[in-house]
Every structure is written in structure tokens, then in C-alpha cells.
Length: 59
Image (cartoon, rainbow, N blue to C red; front, side):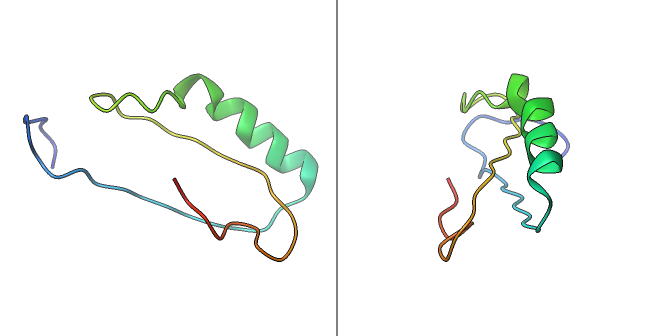
């Protein structure tokens, strides 16, 4: 929805991809100022992971 309204259902957008560690760190650093998790603000986060369960859990 283009307008904020109290009590409206939240919208989540999640994307996952593979990248080199250097590219992942750059992306994470770029989004760090916007990764606030404050419920009334829009926020963006990025995380780097590796291994079998990489990207299995999403907050």
C-alpha cells in the first residue's frame, strides 16, 4: 500500500542470492543504516552466511 495506516498488515519482501563474500559485505554495509527493525519505519537489512543452512531462517 502506498500510504501508511495504523494497524495495516505489514508487507515483507525477501530475496536470496549467492554472491562472493566481498560483494555480500558491501551490500550489508550499504544497508546497515536502514536496518533498524523499528516497526513504524521502512527498513532494509542484508546478511551474509555460508553453509548448509545458509538463508534458512529469515527475520
